[in-house]
Length: 121
Image 1 (tube, rainbow, N blue to C red):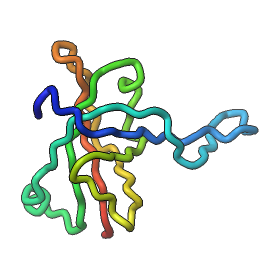
Image 2: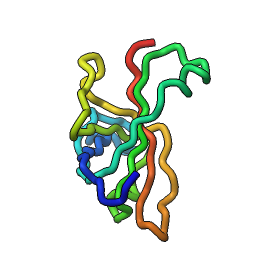
Image 3: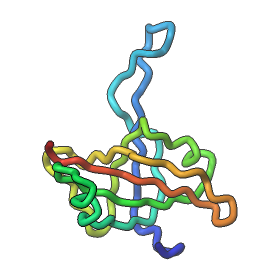
Image 4: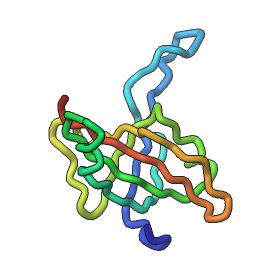
């Protein structure tokens, strides 16, 4: 991925804590927490077939600049990705699950994460 190709915008969606619960464990619907610019690389489907996945899935690797907001991204969040060559699936409404979040790279000041959209299965 090239450092200057941050052509995609991601909206990080988090579950809201429902009021009235003293423990704060009740969670509401996903709501947009913040947006960020990202570079995107589509992964090859051949590796998924070798791994024995029987479901149709799209896998992308995203690179975002490391800052105070993006350091809070976790696998419990969801993403909406907009940009060139991204067509959201009608079945999943364009929501991407976060499969993996790497530690921030201090030298290059970015964070790589893997997002997955599973379609059926």
